[in-house]
Structure formats: structure tokens, C-alpha cells
Image 1 (cartoon, rainbow, N blue to C red):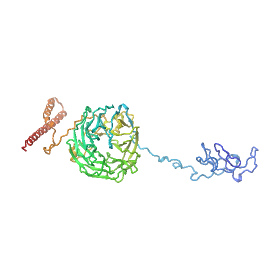
Image 2 (cartoon, rainbow, N blue to C red):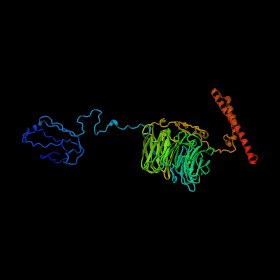
Image 3 (cartoon, rainbow, N blue to C red):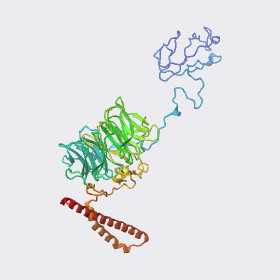
Image 4 (cartoon, one colour):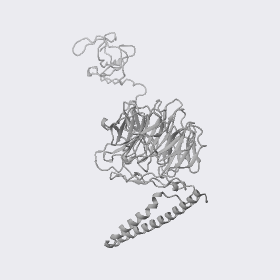
Length: 601
């Protein structure tokens, strides 16, 4: 592009630098000839200096094509034939620094790299979810259609339980984990309830015991055979009756054996001793509306609850008192959830006033303001949180969603750190989470979920990518084992204890499960606890054991073995004395019972 004699642009693809007009004292006279003898054209009017740009240049306003992106003006260099000194550089646009920037100084228009975002270091940044192959799914399961915001699924290292459709009552399916593929429609179910089952929960201290709550206002506890069901199970080990409306929540105590919590639509929370089938505590004045969920803390001394009145409460069940309360934790009217974290903080999910789904983290010492609050999206499904206390990772999935989001909880702001999202095509009807001791540590599996479709259950494996085949100590700290830290009577007396931890290094092998035995309290017994009838036969067996044990004592060598033998003998003597005492007590009770039946008492 160049100018003709009248100063107009005559077109062209790329504008070229235009030489500025010389100062008056150096301007050549009209008709002056060049060194070659040719007459030079009159000098053209000055134009703003331009810079050759690869794609469009800055043209004077009002001339030529529309203004493209600007380029910085550059002072041209005059040819030697012009003579004289170089003209002064044209003035720069406002805001430009004519001097080159000093080292470390910010340059306008250039991002300041010294303040770039630093990626937070975390060993869970690259956790990814992967569904298993189709032959490892559980097909043709008719998942319940009841309108209740429950997970509809519970899983432990031995069994998978799913609430299913049933005619004439409520039922749930219990499958060994190895029974994958298509499930026959005639496969036996647990079907003792007369109304639809709303919630199920495996006992953390016995992998063959499961509790269920139903619309028939009862809680039932079931003993599953070691190899699974061979026929429909209709007789529970114990039936717990105390609610006047349907029971929508059942959850076991994390550390005390045989302690079960249930909550119903009568806004009452009941705590049971399953071993004696008795009601321990009734909390009926703390919730004015429907209870959405209940979660125990790490040692079972407190529990938190989310209620339809939009409040989150922290309750001491043994005192029956309200420890802390936060009203309007989430402004929305849709259901919310609250769970205890390992460090005592409370994590909640809910909805904002504009029906946007939210996550929040609360300090029980100060519930005035959340420590962190995040908004996710505007979907309608209630968010179900699953917490892993070993890794401090919270997995959040919504009913009707097709994704699982996971977040890491830390002690530094912003406290809730988004990690990643697992996304699939099918929406989820429910979700179950495998306890840590049921995972495959050799594959760096840190979580496994069982996603319920309309007619299928699909396991989803969460894995941390690692190249080494060695045991990863940082991924698998000691985790809660199946042994109870307390008996029910100890917990009632006021004792607290953290879970008994086990190591997963040697691919944990569970011990043989003992059957759940319910010993109902005899009204004629004294203050000492009742003994099962089978203990009366214990005397003969202990004598046999003692004879068998003492026989090889002469062949033992070494002080260490002798000491161990003495300990065994002391235990046997104590056990024999206990059996004798209980046998005498049983005789007295039978004699007293005979007098009552004969009318002598």
C-alpha cells in the first residue's frame, strides 16, 4: 500500500512504512533533482507512522479498511540521501513507557507470571473413577421405586444388599459379592417387613448382620447365612418396635457393639441395644419436623442430624441434650444432609434460596458462619455425601445425577478442594460405599461405589495411579476394623473409645463372624446380666479342654512356655469358677420359676 500524489491510499494488501516529511529547513525545493538526474515528486503530507504487521496494520482513522488490532508505532530510519540528522521519534500513545522496562517490572498488557496460580500438591489430585466390565455387574435387579431419599444400597466386604420392588410387603436382596451377572427373578430375598423397606445398614462389627427400617414402623435385625441366602428369609433375629410412623433411618454405632440408632417420620430418634432388644434412649423433643439424616461422630459420643426445618443439630444421645444448633444452615427448602468428619467438623450438603446445590463445612465450636461454602449447580437431586476418614476425601453424588464429584478436606483455607468428577451416561437411583477393609490395596483402590441403575448395580472403582506394586503406606493408613471397642453396657455407662484400627498391609483377612444372639432380660433376674442357656453346658467342655491341655504339660521345655501354660490354666480355673457360679444361679432361678408357676410365691 502506498500514497499517490494527493495523499490518498491507493489500496494494497500490506501497508508499508511511510517516511515522514522532512523539516522545513531540510525540505528539498520543487524541481530539485536527485543524484541520478531524475526530477523528484513533491513531498507528500505527513502520515502517522505505521508498522508492518503480518495480519493487518493500524491505518489512520477514517481512511482505508476498518481498524484492525493496533501495533506499536516505530520511528522510521531515513535514507542517507536525505542528509541531515534523523527526525525526532513521533510521540507515543498515552500510557506507553518510552524506556524499556527494568528487570522484574510489570509490562502493560503482559500477564504477570510472578503471581501465577500455584497448583496445590495432593496425592489425590489424579484419582480417577472407572466402571467395571459388564460381566462384573449385577444385572436384572428391580431397584425399589419408593419415594424416599435413601441410598437404597449397603455393602460390606462379603455381601451387597439392595432394596428391591416387592409385592405385598417390603424386601431387599442380599448377594455375595462374587455373584455377578444376571440375577434370577426367583433369587431369595429378605422379606419379613409388611411395608416397603426404606433404609438398610450393615453392622460394622459383624459382616453377616444387617438392620432394616420400613414403612411398617418397625426395625428388624437379620442374620445372613455365611454363604448367602438359599431360601427367602422371613424371620429376623429381633424386631424393634417403638416408632409410631414409618422408619426411614437406621445406622449402627461406630464403636459399641449391638447399639443401633433409628429415626422415623414421627420425629423421634430411638437408640437400641440389639443384644437385649431393649430401648436405651428416646429423643422425642429435639426435632420439630422430619429428620433427613443422622450421622455419628468418630467415637460415637455425639451425632449430628439434618432436619426439614433447615437446622443442623449436634446431640448428645446419652444426656438427651442439644450440644449445638445452626438454624437455616442452607436456605433452600429441598432436603439436605449433614455428616461428621474425623476431626469433629460437620460437612453439609443442601440448597440455596435460588435452588442451587451447595456444600458447606462447619466448626461445631462456632456455627454462626460456615468455614467454607461452595455452590455446585442447579440440579434437583439431593446430594448424598460419602466420607473416607482415612484420606479426608468426601465423595458427593446426587440422586438422578450421572456423576460423582470428590473433594479433599484440609486444615487450610479454602478447606474444601475440588479434585475431580467421575461422569457416566446413566443416572443413579442409589449408591453404596465399600468399607476400606474391602478394597484391593494391590491396585491402589481407595474407594469403590456400587451405583444403582433402574435394573442394574454397577461397581465403580476409584484409583490413585501408581507405578509401584508395593504397598502404599500413604494411601492406606490403619483403618477401622470389625472389632468393637466397647460393649453396649460400657457405652451406656459413659465410656467412649475410638475404633480399633487394623493394618491393610497384609491384605486383611477377616476373622470368623460370630452369630448375633439376643438375650432378652428376664423380669425375675437380679441385677447381674442374664446368661445364655448354652452356658450351662460349658462346664463339661471346659473340663475336657483342661484335661486336653494339661496332658502335654510334662513335655514342655523352657520358662516361656511354662509361663504361657500357667496363664492358660489360670484362665481355665477362672472360667470353671464362673461356670459353677452361673450353674448355681440358673438352679436358683429355675427353682424360683417353679414356685411362681405352682403359685407358691
